[in-house]
Image (cartoon, rainbow, N blue to C red; front, side, top):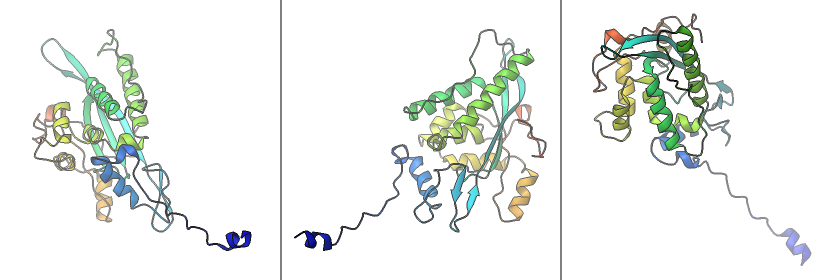
Length: 255
């Protein structure tokens, strides 16, 4: 009997399946996961949307996302009030992003909105903190402004390292369009005639290309455009009074 048991064929192991994590099983996350599966090689995926992916040829392709928060400017809200907004510059080769280079301007309260929305959609993740909001903040104090700028950049750098947060369409609209929070919510919830990708592509087409992106496009790569400010409708013409003023040369960028 023992010999019979030893000679019996062992059950074959069930093949591994590639299923999305719980946070990516619906909505835009599912599409993102399907894109990530294309990078599978021999059943191996090195870090979902992480710093390194395995290509079909088995060679590692390094992915990067450069984010810079810079160029604080004072904007007049009305006759008595003003605020500071900051330029957010993105340059990446990551498949997560619709455009590989973009440039928008955001104010502090829009960062607050973004963190609240990301946290509500990823309750199990402890999001990084924003720089503290103080009643003593002075828009005319260079130290106050630069300290906040550094805190906003550190916040975005940490956010962009998390694959689950990268699957949130609000983050991409925040970084690659000038839609207001209200318009971003409407777009994500399907209440607009344009999709998330449409909004990003439209904003890119409203402004000039970066020279480095033109070279990549000529070589068969993805071209990318900087984003411009627009009206509250989300897809209107740019407003020169608050244009982001992106630098053309990437070599001179400073964090």
